[in-house]
Length: 189
Image (cartoon, one colour):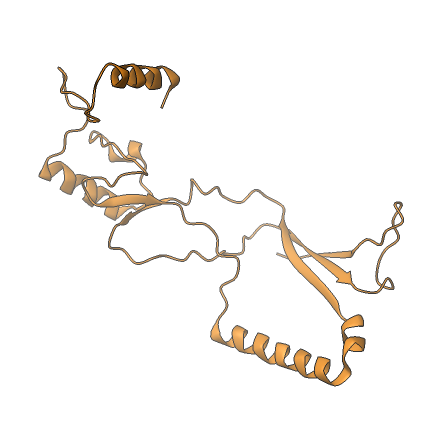
């Protein structure tokens, strides 16, 4: 809400206004919806869920993220799910962690001092699509959709970062502190 509107409302409440709803005014209503128009808009949206307001054509509708439209549809911005693990992936992780736990219970802290943790990520050669481009219309009764990240066809580089506990794997630093070792390789895509 703008500052002049806030000042106007404060002045009206100081003057004794108690009703929070707007008073009726002259002129055309801001939104007009008939059952035929709602059905036409819903048909257009259901045929292509990535339709924008310009794709609706002559049918003008007010779309808001904060309140539902007369069609019962709303816009949803699907973000990326970092990892979508299958049952087999979860089982493999569980087996790996059980083995690590078994070795720790057998060897103690000596085992921890030899461990190296790391992470890897693909660095893309292009800018992926925006969240705005991935938005699609959904009905209020639609099931929750999970969007999996599809690997793009452009070139990419795998960056591996290792964080060892001991300094043997670390690269020297100008500041005197050990830096993590970083490797990279290019994918042939």
